[in-house]
Amino acid sequence: MQKVINISISPKRASDEKYYKVDAAEYLNIKVEKITGIEILKKSIDARKKFIKVNLQLHVWWGEIFTKEDEFRLKLNNVSAKPEVIVVGAGPAGLFAALKLIENNLKPVIFERGKDVGARKKDIQILNTNKGVNPDSNYCFGEGGAGTFSDGKLYTRSKKRGDVKRILDIFKYHGASNDILSDAHPHIGTNKLPGIIVKIRETIEEAGGEIHFNSRVEDFIIKEDTIKGIITQHGDKVLGKAVILATGHSARDIFELLHKKNILIEAKPFAMGVRVEHPQDLIDSIQYSCKIRSNYLPPASYSLVSQIEGRGVYSFCMCPGGFIVPAVTAPNEIVVNGMSPSRRNSKFANSGIVVEIKVEDFPEYEKYGVLAGLKFQQSLEQTAFLNGGNGLIAPAQRLHDFVNGKLSPALPETSYNPGILSSPLHFWLPEHISKRLRKGFKYFGKRMRGYLTNEAVVLGVETGTSSPVRIPRDKETLQHPQIKNLYPCGEGAGYSGGIISSAVDGERCAGNVFTDLQ
Image 1 (cartoon, rainbow, N blue to C red):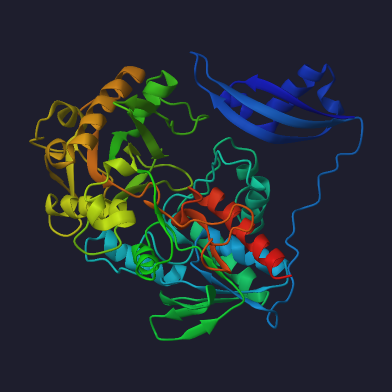
Image 2: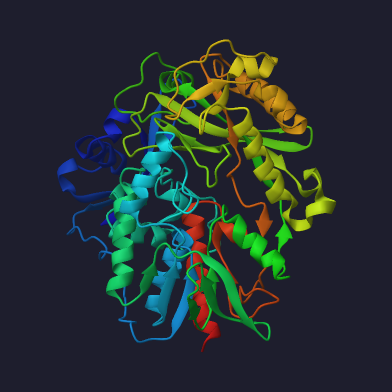
């Protein structure tokens, strides 16, 4: 027989099969020796009460031979001589679109403005040591997109648009841990994801697909309202049956190019704010109600949300046991983001705390039109640079001082490698952001006793939550309503927010390309 059961047990017992097998046998009222196989389907932590529990969903076999499902396999064709489809961007949307195109017997030709993983690491090291930024190779641009060197969280609330399990299976197929299939908030880690991305690239190339690095797209070839191809910064003209535009939300030049060519784009809401960093031990003590975290528990995380004066204020991209990194894409700007390695073993915990920005909040909308949000975003990053130190040294303020409008005379240790400089963020942030952040932090301090403390530090600015621009597309075909065979895709087009939802959207666009080309 076999059965799927749900049990809640201690973190220690959930850590080892020899323990939870006994608990499963007791639940089923059978002898443990009768169990022939057991698998974890889902795993989550419930820390709401004093005694923390781990919820396990288990598939248990007993009295019959244990048979696992067949291992997931990609069914790839050799597409080297098949019709070519251009994919702009080698982030998760672009890479998963390419895999789906191959499955549908089409040849993906990917153009990525940045470098491959190996070369990109060197540019990121230069960033982290405050020696300059390469606008085409950084934490946002390059093989694998923003996620490659920025954490690798695989959690998504978007369950309706595609097969999330398939995306997780593909990551596992290319080397991710089996745990991502069962954890409630799966995570690969910034130390492991680069190698997995390389394997995905190798899969694409072995099937006959192409990837061109250092190939920024600078123009589109459009004839009679139909896109025919692209032009790179090298002047190369490349034709294809369709173009999947998966550039990511930081590709401002693409938005400006579309606007310049009178191709319809739309302003959309997004969010901006700061990144806050606490000692991980402090977050553990708050969330787990303990002085010292058990070895059987992972570093604690949190998720916070409130409504302040008609705008959402919420945590974004929370990184337990993580680091804050410089996510800039241009000189004379400061943008911070967070990441965690797979072991989440840093002594710091960080999270973006951001304020919802609606279209009516954009300054100078009459001047910039649909690009007003993008210009607002850029101006805040430039303001952060002017209020920081030399190069990528970020402006910072102790959390309690920020809330109380006081300049911090000294700052705590931080994970942000380029360094921080005391600055009155409460003063120079736009008032509608600063005011709501300060009220939001007060509210969060009541939700999590001990959270609002001067042991924590806020760094400015966190602007990369999502794209301030949406590229419209038909709901059925996913093509741009004005330009035939152009498929806006992923975060940059405004249709996803994170690795998994971007990968799902990439697959959807690739599937529609196949259908439309029949």
